[in-house]
Image (tube, rainbow, N blue to C red):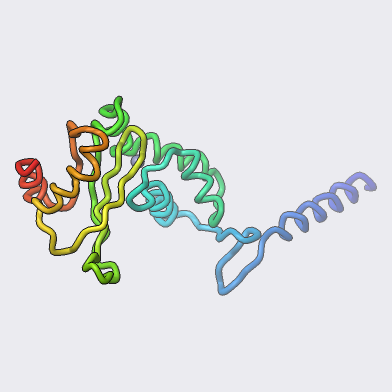
Amino acid sequence: MLRAFHTFYLLRVMVKILLSFFNVNNEHLFKEVRNCIPHGSHRKFLIKEMHEGGLMGNFGAGKTLIMLKEKFFWPHMRKEVQRHCFSCLTCLHALSIASTPWEDISMDFVLGLPRTSRGVDSIFVAVDYFSKMAHFIPCRKVDDASNIANLFFKFVVRLHRLPKTIVFDRDTKFLSHFWRTL
Ligand SMILES: [Zn+2]
């Protein structure tokens, strides 16, 4: 009888301690400051967003997990993050090709920023797959492929070399013209 009482008491204390970590705010469940994410596609979406993380993205599983854990909580997060990162096609592609700095790169644009007095309103970004180093080059939204090729030569090729492969997701016409100009 006494033993049963003890067990019951211990259980109550444990549940109380566990519950003290959780709180509800605006109908969202939080574990301390981290938003608890229920089962479903949201988890996959969050992992993908965090892993890809904008232009400098495709972070490793460790960094993706750290960033995710800052804001969110769900059980077995680590396993799901690892599964996603280790099967990410972009990462596998980068791993399989990159062996020397600035040989395989990706390019992208950040368009539509507030225009400066010099007419600059966009940023041309070139990222090296191998070192993950990036160049951020101010440009204009109206710049065409040959203008961008000039900037590329001035800021990237002169410092490194002409890359072997360039990944540019936006516009294949732009890229082919770009290559011809180079
Ligand atoms: Zn990736």
